Image (cartoon, helix red, strand yellow):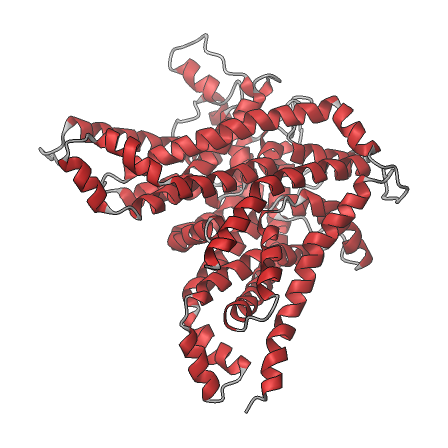
Length: 287
Length: 291
């Protein structure tokens, strides 16, 4: 490190504290990653923080295609694919609906629309435990129980309140004159949406896509309640894998599996963290 | 040329499916859950009305009281600890740090991960024998023991540690945004008057963050009430049911113990608790924006 003479003791203390906290936050990630590259012998004989002596991707390969999750021993691959199958349509549909709703709620308000929106907003905070039992019956009636389609439906329904909130708040910031002028020029509801509103939507679109992707990918509750043997998402696969009570616990495989389950959202965060934070804060404050 | 009539009904038509579906999803299923909680449902839902019997059974169940007590411990420490740490991080980061962007990214990344992922990692770190205990023993403290995860009295504190680790960065992000919104001139004026930096924070800056405090508190406490994944990944409610929270209690009763009525009743209590926190908040937020 370059010597910077103006560094006062207080400043050093501050930096020290910040770096210590950084270590605290990074430690679990480091532990996961390093353990996933070790052999079981090494895990037993070295400490948590030791660097892997001869890093190997063996545990990753096992976690991907051979580890046992309960009675199955096909690794996480099928779960990962289920999650992909689930997350892409669920994110796409809930985001599109949110954009349309936000457009109507900010630019085409009608009597009662604000009240209905306010009622909808409670869905952002509602504890999902309250819908689990009736929803599993509804899915049964619809013939969607234990299928990826059922999970997609639930994620779309659960996602509409937050996607609508995001787009409504964003579109409220677009000047109304823009819409009025276009209406006077004879543009229709859809033309205004396609030609004026949508091209201005890139920032909020990214925020919503990332927010929905992270939430749905990370969901465990719906996955564990509504999925069947062939439609379990990655979080359920990981949990089953990590909680399988086999005679020999393979921690390196557990950690590799956790890394695999976490990589997609970590990647999104690394690439577009700014938008992720915006989603977090938009979900938290501001009506 | 779109006719006037058409522009009047089209927006309503476009939003109607979302309104109908999400209001049914939210309030319809909520009501249905309420009906189930008043029924004699066990393995399968039935609609034999039994009044408040399930609620009586719920509050006579020792396991439910354990879950409530845990929610008190976990909720208090998770909300209090997470907010304190988050605020501290935000204030430290607010001192014109060169590495601010990088540090912010590091503090916040846990929030991008599933609780199932981080729970799996923490379970191993806190594992007596292999994790932290082993590490400290290797550092030369042979007598060090850290068995909280398997100790029924202490396991809930492991959930607290992992929970705070996960959420502190989120609180930091909210406070940092609040801090950035404060007018610099107030601080400069106080500095001219000779006030020390800690004093300025304590007396001026933190009090002016009150609205941020309030909304952060709402969000973090409703997260605490809904906490499910973290416990499932870290302890699965164990040892025994020592780390049950209302959310895991509900899941166990409804989906593995064949006590649907009881599960529905516990879900209603959770709903009421969240509503008590969130509804006044939403009300004030919405009224604020409606000028």
